Amino acid sequence: MSCHIVSQGIMGIVVQRWEGAGRPDWTIGRTVNEVRRADAQLGRDGLGKVRHRALREHILQGDGAYVRQWTLGCHFCWINPRNPPCPICGRG
Image 1 (tube, rainbow, N blue to C red):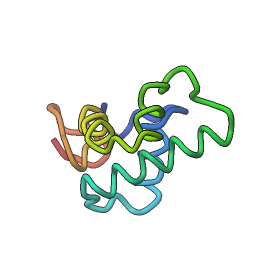
Image 2: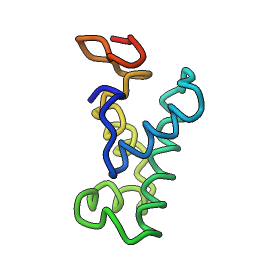
Image 3: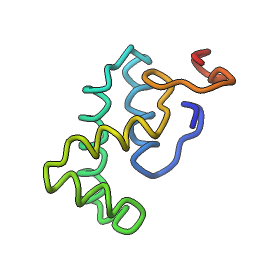
Image 4: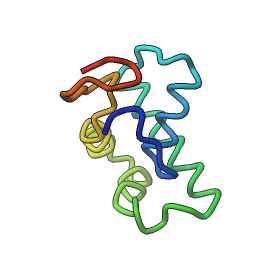
């Protein structure tokens, strides 16, 4: 997923926060924290119960390795770029 694709899910929330922060070079650790925050936000809003159920369960269990791997699998352009380069930030 490139950063120009924004959804109502966890990835979309994280991308919106990253863009709102001026597209900084977030580390994997910072991005994992943002994933956890986005999941908590969706939980409070009553959203994302089915779509990200496995992720939420691992977050609640404190399974940091799973959450980190899930985050890396998202291919956020600032930590794990893909080709072609992202049309917004040019990373890739």
